[in-house]
Length: 163
Image (tube, rainbow, N blue to C red):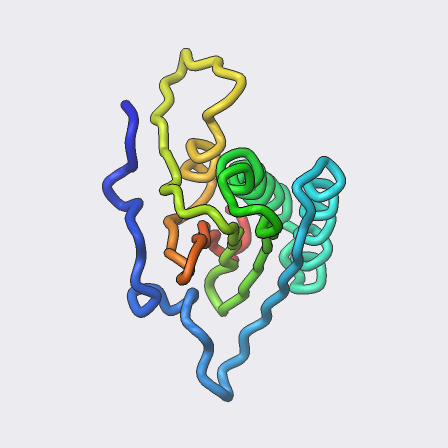
């Protein structure tokens, strides 16, 4: 199977409260980081995610969150940054905490739609499994265009303690 899963489509931020700006008076924590398109950038992304979740007392979710943010960042670097106009290769990570979820975002300058390639149990490809991993770990994920150019790919994880 190739293409996008049915739920992966450009999203109106109004459909997802955790992706909208928070009204004044509602407690929400957020953090953002710009990374370089390099191995050092990925290491920084993992450390940033782990440290942020530790500050939010969500250590029990850091392994899943680190894996998701790494996969999303790797996709941005591999697929969006090379297509971006010269000098516009910034990749931004974002973490947003609301009472029930943590939303992980990666924004890049590419306009290409994330390509979800389904996998089966015998699939041992070295590349192309990132969004399958994100799909398995996240409650929901999708992407939002970022006018005038670019997009934000996001994944929502529950903040509930593991069973």
